[in-house]
Every structure is written in structure tokens, then in C-alpha cells.
Image (cartoon, rainbow, N blue to C red; front, side):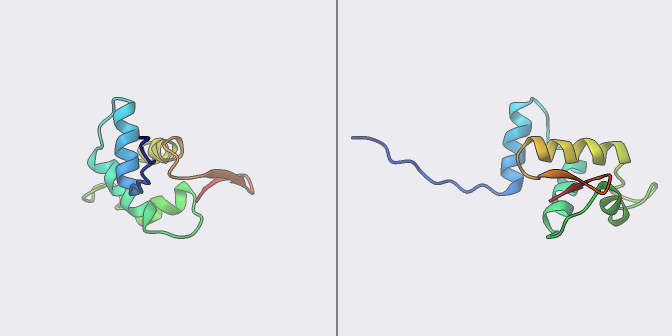
Length: 93
């Protein structure tokens, strides 16, 4: 008897955690916060637009610009987001 393929639909969080595990990284509070922000949006955005919606320096849950850029790239590498160039800026969907 052959095993039938099982269709497993993972949430973005589960997919990202699997990706991080495969890279030996842990899912930090900052990554979770960004994941939540990004996947509650349904339009294109760039890193600056995302930064505008996040807490500013000195506030709870502040995330630095470099962490935002690095984490967005991780989302792309994990297959959760697509990035493309639009009018000279990198846009994510």
C-alpha cells in the first residue's frame, strides 16, 4: 500500500518557525511582532511604511531599522513574502 500525500497547510508563523529552525535561529519577540504586522496587511508595502506602523525608539516593542530589513529578507527567504523593485524601492507582498 502506498501512502497518500497529506496536504498540510501551515500558518505563516509555523512556516517561519520551521525556516528559522532549519537555519538554527530562534523566533525572537521582534520577529514575531514583525510577522504579525506584515501578515495582517493585504497590500504592498516597503520597509519604511512598515517602520511607520511600528513603535518608535524608546517605546515598548521597538524594532530597529536593520532588524526590520533583515527580518523582511528572512520572510522572503522562507517563502512567506515576495519582494520586487518598484520605482527604485524594494516592495514586499
